[in-house]
Length: 263
Image 1 (spheres, rainbow, N blue to C red):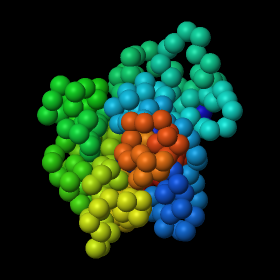
Image 2: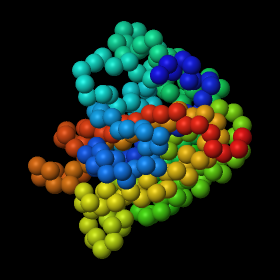
Image 3: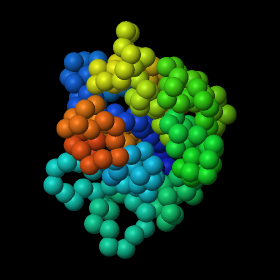
Protein backbone atom coordinates (compact mmCIF):
# COMPACT_ATOMS: atom_id res chain seq x y z
CA UNK A 1 0.00 0.00 0.00
CA UNK A 2 1.55 3.28 -1.15
CA UNK A 3 0.58 5.77 1.53
CA UNK A 4 1.73 8.66 -0.61
CA UNK A 5 -1.31 7.94 -2.79
CA UNK A 6 -3.66 7.20 0.11
CA UNK A 7 -3.03 10.39 2.11
CA UNK A 8 -5.03 13.17 0.46
CA UNK A 9 -7.32 10.83 -1.48
CA UNK A 10 -8.82 8.79 1.39
CA UNK A 11 -10.21 9.36 4.84
CA UNK A 12 -8.30 7.48 7.53
CA UNK A 13 -9.96 5.54 10.35
CA UNK A 14 -7.71 4.21 13.11
CA UNK A 15 -9.48 1.91 15.59
CA UNK A 16 -7.65 0.58 18.63
CA UNK A 17 -9.38 -2.31 20.36
CA UNK A 18 -7.93 -1.54 23.74
CA UNK A 19 -6.41 -4.57 25.52
CA UNK A 20 -7.43 -7.13 22.86
CA UNK A 21 -5.31 -10.29 22.94
CA UNK A 22 -4.12 -11.78 19.66
CA UNK A 23 -5.05 -15.36 20.56
CA UNK A 24 -8.65 -14.45 21.37
CA UNK A 25 -8.99 -12.31 18.24
CA UNK A 26 -7.56 -15.09 16.09
CA UNK A 27 -9.84 -17.76 17.57
CA UNK A 28 -12.99 -15.75 16.95
CA UNK A 29 -11.90 -14.88 13.42
CA UNK A 30 -11.18 -18.52 12.58
CA UNK A 31 -14.60 -19.46 13.93
CA UNK A 32 -16.24 -16.96 11.57
CA UNK A 33 -17.43 -14.75 14.41
CA UNK A 34 -15.81 -11.47 13.26
CA UNK A 35 -17.35 -11.01 9.83
CA UNK A 36 -18.41 -7.43 10.59
CA UNK A 37 -15.11 -6.36 12.12
CA UNK A 38 -13.11 -8.01 9.30
CA UNK A 39 -15.16 -7.40 6.15
CA UNK A 40 -14.37 -8.53 2.62
CA UNK A 41 -11.83 -11.16 3.52
CA UNK A 42 -9.72 -8.98 5.81
CA UNK A 43 -7.53 -11.05 8.13
CA UNK A 44 -5.66 -10.53 11.36
CA UNK A 45 -1.91 -10.24 11.18
CA UNK A 46 0.14 -11.24 14.21
CA UNK A 47 2.20 -8.27 15.34
CA UNK A 48 4.13 -6.91 18.31
CA UNK A 49 3.00 -3.76 20.07
CA UNK A 50 5.46 -0.93 20.76
CA UNK A 51 4.13 -0.73 24.34
CA UNK A 52 2.66 -2.86 27.10
CA UNK A 53 -0.05 -0.41 28.19
CA UNK A 54 -2.34 2.16 26.63
CA UNK A 55 -0.39 5.38 27.02
CA UNK A 56 2.94 4.01 25.83
CA UNK A 57 1.42 2.24 22.82
CA UNK A 58 -0.65 5.19 21.65
CA UNK A 59 2.20 7.65 22.08
CA UNK A 60 4.12 5.42 19.66
CA UNK A 61 1.15 5.01 17.29
CA UNK A 62 0.71 8.76 17.04
CA UNK A 63 4.39 9.10 16.15
CA UNK A 64 3.92 6.65 13.27
CA UNK A 65 5.03 3.45 15.02
CA UNK A 66 2.12 1.05 14.59
CA UNK A 67 2.45 -2.59 15.73
CA UNK A 68 5.37 -4.34 14.01
CA UNK A 69 5.07 -7.64 12.07
CA UNK A 70 6.53 -10.52 14.05
CA UNK A 71 8.62 -11.74 11.10
CA UNK A 72 12.19 -10.47 10.71
CA UNK A 73 12.39 -6.96 9.27
CA UNK A 74 12.99 -4.21 8.61
CA UNK A 75 9.32 -3.47 7.91
CA UNK A 76 8.55 -0.16 6.14
CA UNK A 77 5.94 1.84 8.04
CA UNK A 78 2.75 3.44 6.70
CA UNK A 79 3.52 6.79 8.34
CA UNK A 80 6.80 8.22 9.55
CA UNK A 81 7.87 11.54 10.98
CA UNK A 82 10.92 13.14 9.42
CA UNK A 83 13.79 11.40 11.19
CA UNK A 84 17.34 11.14 9.84
CA UNK A 85 18.60 7.57 9.72
CA UNK A 86 15.18 5.91 9.94
CA UNK A 87 15.47 2.33 8.69
CA UNK A 88 11.71 1.76 8.42
CA UNK A 89 10.86 4.66 6.10
CA UNK A 90 10.27 3.09 2.69
CA UNK A 91 9.25 4.19 -0.78
CA UNK A 92 5.56 3.83 0.10
CA UNK A 93 5.77 5.54 3.48
CA UNK A 94 3.99 8.87 3.90
CA UNK A 95 6.49 11.13 5.64
CA UNK A 96 5.30 14.09 7.70
CA UNK A 97 7.33 16.99 9.04
CA UNK A 98 5.58 17.31 12.38
CA UNK A 99 6.00 15.91 15.90
CA UNK A 100 2.99 13.60 15.64
CA UNK A 101 0.70 11.99 13.08
CA UNK A 102 -2.43 14.08 13.84
CA UNK A 103 -0.43 17.27 13.31
CA UNK A 104 1.08 15.91 10.12
CA UNK A 105 -2.31 14.95 8.71
CA UNK A 106 -3.79 18.29 9.77
CA UNK A 107 -1.08 20.03 7.75
CA UNK A 108 -2.12 17.84 4.80
CA UNK A 109 -5.71 19.13 5.03
CA UNK A 110 -7.31 16.57 7.34
CA UNK A 111 -9.68 17.36 10.17
CA UNK A 112 -8.42 15.25 13.09
CA UNK A 113 -10.88 13.74 15.56
CA UNK A 114 -10.38 11.61 18.67
CA UNK A 115 -13.23 9.64 20.27
CA UNK A 116 -11.78 8.27 23.47
CA UNK A 117 -12.61 5.24 25.54
CA UNK A 118 -10.28 4.28 28.41
CA UNK A 119 -9.03 6.69 31.06
CA UNK A 120 -6.02 7.98 29.13
CA UNK A 121 -8.52 9.77 26.86
CA UNK A 122 -10.98 11.09 29.46
CA UNK A 123 -9.59 14.67 29.62
CA UNK A 124 -10.28 14.75 33.36
CA UNK A 125 -6.60 15.18 34.27
CA UNK A 126 -3.51 16.64 32.56
CA UNK A 127 -2.39 13.07 31.74
CA UNK A 128 -5.84 12.15 30.44
CA UNK A 129 -5.69 15.23 28.20
CA UNK A 130 -2.27 14.63 26.65
CA UNK A 131 -3.28 12.19 23.89
CA UNK A 132 -6.64 13.83 23.04
CA UNK A 133 -4.81 17.17 22.92
CA UNK A 134 -3.02 16.04 19.76
CA UNK A 135 -6.30 16.29 17.83
CA UNK A 136 -8.25 19.29 16.57
CA UNK A 137 -11.41 17.80 18.07
CA UNK A 138 -11.73 15.28 20.89
CA UNK A 139 -14.64 13.65 22.68
CA UNK A 140 -15.08 11.60 25.83
CA UNK A 141 -18.06 10.87 28.05
CA UNK A 142 -18.44 8.46 30.98
CA UNK A 143 -20.64 6.25 28.80
CA UNK A 144 -17.69 5.80 26.41
CA UNK A 145 -15.64 4.26 29.20
CA UNK A 146 -14.89 0.81 30.54
CA UNK A 147 -17.79 0.59 33.01
CA UNK A 148 -20.60 1.00 30.46
CA UNK A 149 -21.65 -2.27 28.76
CA UNK A 150 -22.89 -0.28 25.75
CA UNK A 151 -19.78 1.89 25.40
CA UNK A 152 -19.16 1.21 21.72
CA UNK A 153 -22.74 1.98 20.80
CA UNK A 154 -22.46 5.35 22.52
CA UNK A 155 -19.15 6.06 20.81
CA UNK A 156 -20.59 5.28 17.39
CA UNK A 157 -23.56 7.55 18.09
CA UNK A 158 -21.09 10.38 18.71
CA UNK A 159 -19.13 9.57 15.55
CA UNK A 160 -22.35 9.92 13.57
CA UNK A 161 -22.93 13.37 15.04
CA UNK A 162 -19.35 14.39 14.26
CA UNK A 163 -19.23 13.19 10.67
CA UNK A 164 -22.53 14.83 9.87
CA UNK A 165 -20.82 18.22 10.10
CA UNK A 166 -17.49 17.47 8.38
CA UNK A 167 -16.94 17.97 4.65
CA UNK A 168 -13.13 17.81 4.52
CA UNK A 169 -10.92 14.75 4.65
CA UNK A 170 -10.99 13.28 8.15
CA UNK A 171 -8.56 11.35 10.32
CA UNK A 172 -10.83 9.65 12.85
CA UNK A 173 -9.33 7.83 15.80
CA UNK A 174 -11.56 5.62 17.97
CA UNK A 175 -10.33 3.94 21.15
CA UNK A 176 -12.72 1.06 21.90
CA UNK A 177 -12.87 0.43 25.65
CA UNK A 178 -15.14 -2.64 25.67
CA UNK A 179 -12.34 -5.25 25.80
CA UNK A 180 -10.68 -3.64 28.82
CA UNK A 181 -11.54 -4.85 32.28
CA UNK A 182 -14.22 -4.94 33.59
CA UNK A 183 -15.73 -7.04 30.80
CA UNK A 184 -17.58 -9.76 32.73
CA UNK A 185 -20.95 -8.19 31.93
CA UNK A 186 -20.67 -9.33 28.29
CA UNK A 187 -21.04 -13.00 29.30
CA UNK A 188 -24.36 -13.81 30.98
CA UNK A 189 -23.85 -15.32 34.41
CA UNK A 190 -20.19 -14.31 34.71
CA UNK A 191 -19.18 -12.49 37.89
CA UNK A 192 -15.46 -12.04 37.17
CA UNK A 193 -13.33 -11.16 34.16
CA UNK A 194 -11.72 -14.03 32.26
CA UNK A 195 -10.48 -14.99 28.84
CA UNK A 196 -14.07 -16.05 28.04
CA UNK A 197 -15.55 -12.71 29.00
CA UNK A 198 -12.81 -11.02 26.96
CA UNK A 199 -13.99 -13.04 23.96
CA UNK A 200 -17.60 -12.12 24.67
CA UNK A 201 -16.62 -8.46 24.69
CA UNK A 202 -15.02 -8.87 21.26
CA UNK A 203 -18.21 -10.50 19.98
CA UNK A 204 -20.09 -7.44 21.26
CA UNK A 205 -17.74 -5.19 19.28
CA UNK A 206 -18.33 -7.25 16.14
CA UNK A 207 -22.10 -6.91 16.50
CA UNK A 208 -21.92 -3.12 16.38
CA UNK A 209 -18.79 -2.13 14.43
CA UNK A 210 -20.54 -2.39 11.07
CA UNK A 211 -22.56 0.69 11.92
CA UNK A 212 -19.32 2.64 12.30
CA UNK A 213 -18.07 1.48 8.90
CA UNK A 214 -21.39 2.48 7.34
CA UNK A 215 -20.94 6.04 8.60
CA UNK A 216 -17.75 6.69 6.62
CA UNK A 217 -18.81 8.87 3.67
CA UNK A 218 -15.74 8.51 1.42
CA UNK A 219 -13.17 5.85 0.53
CA UNK A 220 -11.36 5.16 3.78
CA UNK A 221 -8.17 3.46 4.85
CA UNK A 222 -9.18 1.48 7.93
CA UNK A 223 -6.54 0.34 10.41
CA UNK A 224 -7.74 -1.90 13.25
CA UNK A 225 -5.36 -3.11 15.92
CA UNK A 226 -4.89 -3.67 19.61
CA UNK A 227 -2.55 -1.51 21.66
CA UNK A 228 -1.59 -4.42 23.93
CA UNK A 229 -3.01 -7.65 25.30
CA UNK A 230 -3.71 -8.61 28.88
CA UNK A 231 -3.10 -11.61 31.11
CA UNK A 232 -5.74 -13.74 32.81
CA UNK A 233 -3.50 -15.81 35.04
CA UNK A 234 -0.82 -16.91 32.56
CA UNK A 235 2.37 -17.64 34.55
CA UNK A 236 0.67 -16.02 37.54
CA UNK A 237 0.15 -12.67 35.80
CA UNK A 238 -3.08 -10.70 35.72
CA UNK A 239 -3.40 -7.48 33.70
CA UNK A 240 -0.80 -5.75 31.53
CA UNK A 241 2.16 -3.32 31.68
CA UNK A 242 4.32 -6.44 31.85
CA UNK A 243 6.64 -8.10 29.32
CA UNK A 244 4.59 -11.23 28.64
CA UNK A 245 3.76 -12.83 25.29
CA UNK A 246 0.01 -12.35 25.75
CA UNK A 247 0.61 -8.63 26.32
CA UNK A 248 3.14 -7.90 23.56
CA UNK A 249 1.41 -9.88 20.78
CA UNK A 250 -1.54 -8.09 19.18
CA UNK A 251 -3.87 -8.42 16.17
CA UNK A 252 -3.58 -5.97 13.28
CA UNK A 253 -5.41 -5.48 9.99
CA UNK A 254 -5.73 -2.78 7.34
CA UNK A 255 -8.08 -2.50 4.39
CA UNK A 256 -9.79 0.00 2.09
CA UNK A 257 -13.44 0.63 2.90
CA UNK A 258 -15.67 1.93 0.13
CA UNK A 259 -18.27 4.54 1.13
CA UNK A 260 -21.68 3.60 2.44
CA UNK A 261 -23.01 6.89 3.80
CA UNK A 262 -24.12 9.74 1.54
CA UNK A 263 -21.57 12.53 1.07
